[in-house]
Length: 356
Picture 1 (cartoon, rainbow, N blue to C red):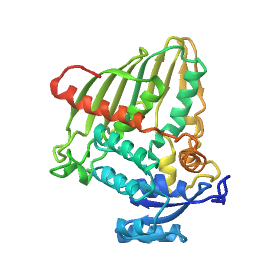
Picture 2: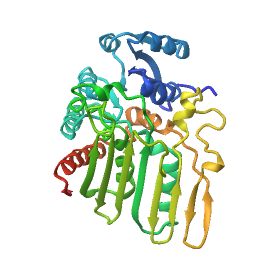
Picture 3: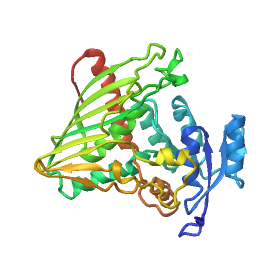
Picture 4: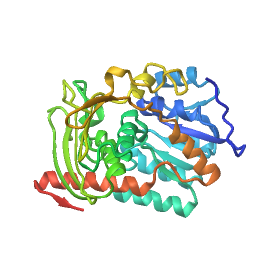
């Protein structure tokens, strides 16, 4: 499926993508290159094999070896998908150079850094947009619809988890300064879990956490449990680990009218890694045997999972820049998430609940 890169306004923005690892190659480049109003003008990666792969798939895109070469091209928008510790300085560099910026999760290592980026963006008249693609997961869209339609009633308990089995450790988690580099399970998987919980149930008043290191070869937390109390009354239990040989349910949601149970993760990441692209037939569709279950106590029924598609994120980015539409994700939303992560570390260390 071929899409025009011209927007409704007739303008096209040149986009420079920094980083072509899992994030850049899987979650950014395929969507930027297919979004009307955006042109994937440059990809920055110094890795020879990644340069070869990028050149083969994106033949009209410059493949650059360093960041300075990118900023010499004066891109309209910079997308950052690099190690966590580099997000803050690269975002500042992009904004100071006159570009809008999209920053992969975590938006910054700390809530203070995130606020600084937002303040700088406002001063220079550019947009700084956090990347939270899991808002367009099919299972999340399904759950959001069930809640909006009243199928669950008032949700009083929300259990959400990302379980991984990773005997091959992340190299960044083994570095002596990994904690200072924001390399840990909270800044990784829990960033998504917290964002979805905030989107569904609103602000959090109290945080309790158990954060620990299971693998003796890493130096940061690779297993975490967060219990959040929302101002609206819902209670959230968020878990993620790198040591789950058998994963638990993705969602288990309890309401006054019913409950929703869902196993398995959104299919998009696996499909994109296998070479599928947005717009392909069947993209984002989950097989029936993976659908979740809606129960009302006496009856249970399978619920078709919504089609997942991360494309709306970059479409909304283009409209925000070209047409002054609202950005798809706001900085205050991720600041709230980072404050919860910071509170979680304090709670775990003190072994008590932290009030926000």
